[in-house]
Length: 83
Image 1: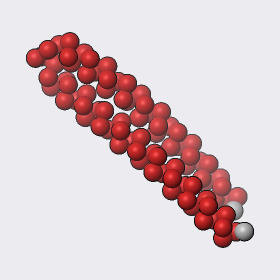
Image 2 (image 1 turned 180 degrees about the vertical axis):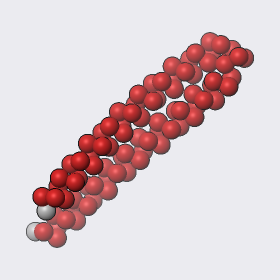
Image 3 (image 1 turned 90 degrees about the vertical axis):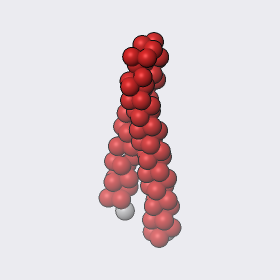
Image 4 (image 1 turned 60 degrees about the vertical axis):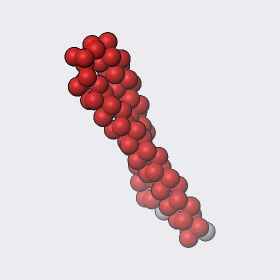
């Protein structure tokens, strides 16, 4: 049981890092979109990159959220079985 709790804690720490990276990536994407807008026509390609970065940040955050949900479900199942 201790090993499962330890593994869950490690996975939770990793998902926190993923969330942080997703947040920072989203900020970079927003800044890139602003700069692309400032550049006008010359920044159109950069705008696409910014949009893709934003999508990547969103997908990363959603994946981390799903991992947290699965950890919680697994912990409840293990606790029920161990009780």
